[in-house]
Length: 469
Image (cartoon, rainbow, N blue to C red; front, side, top):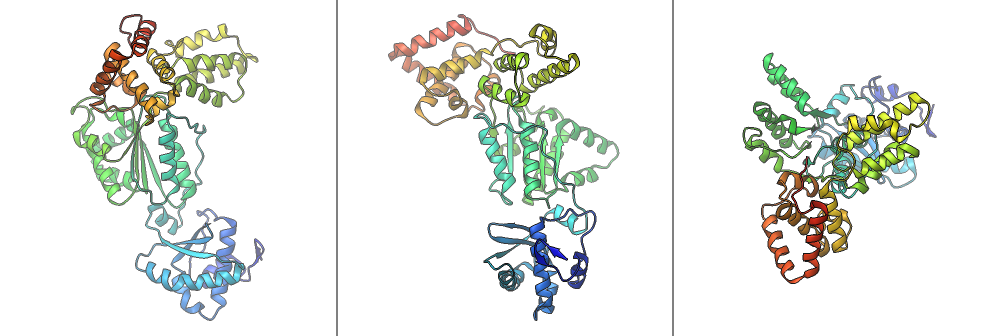
């Protein structure tokens, strides 16, 4: 029998495993990478036939192959006591045999696997291969930092941060980021078991467990994972007992080094809506704010969703991209509905034929939100891209443009802080008085800046305060 060009005298994986006193692969286990599988079993054959096979056999029985990465064969063991002798005594001998077998310098790296998924795999239970998200992730300046942080967490077995909090308004792709994280993490680390929860479903399960007096079993079913992803945390507003239980779960997972990723809208309200301990715990991790999408970002995402834009569909995508007050998820739902109507009609409908559908789903569509136009004008005035204002760039021009936008929001149009946070992300308590003092001082000496402020106030606000939904 041959495995990838390497002789296999033992005959089968079951025979080799039995020779080394190890359980053979079960039907529930997914196969390894073919190259890793062939290399590992060929290495087992050399060890079993060598003079030191009897000594190494009980130690090798504690090892499992994981991957071939960066010039090293990665092996894992679930025995913490055996880790040191495996690294100091067994690994050098395996490297010598591997060098003779492969004809090149390959290292052997042995790691400790304490994951719950690894324990289940040792019992012959393996989760099905992960499926990619239904839609691909589009990275734009508004979500680039959050995407890079989550992808880094997906790549690194032991990331520097183990708690992330994604915060942003509706429709900025928080759920898609979480789905991408889980998929990438399970693809790179298939031995791990990740748990995903949503706010409303979590509360229903918690309520049912309380009625059945099964809170301990419910808690155990949630924390029995190597990482927890919790979406729509804002839906727990007012559910204080549920929040208290969730804080206990977060503390349990973090004490064991298991990542916790939480996503939701900004938590608005006082202690009657959210426990101070709950807010404090969320602030203890890495907080990543995703502001509202700009018209350009929305246009790129919608174009990627409809793939081949043409005719009415392309024009409608441009219209919905400009209507920045409409959540992106609702805009995508409109495009899907128009696509279904086109399939029913057998042709692409005209714009007038889908106007009722568009207005029924998105009645407020038709133009950009005023504050989106304020950001565009401020970016043009200071000579930087709008994304630099939203992304919090440290350049002098971006800082001035951001302070101008804050001045417009609070001093001219008298907007609520929650509205401004949708576009600029979290604001420190000192930024508003600092921006007011800075812009007032500049207006006194710079006529061009003073004229710009008056022009935008007249153009967008028409001399009055505009209202936001």
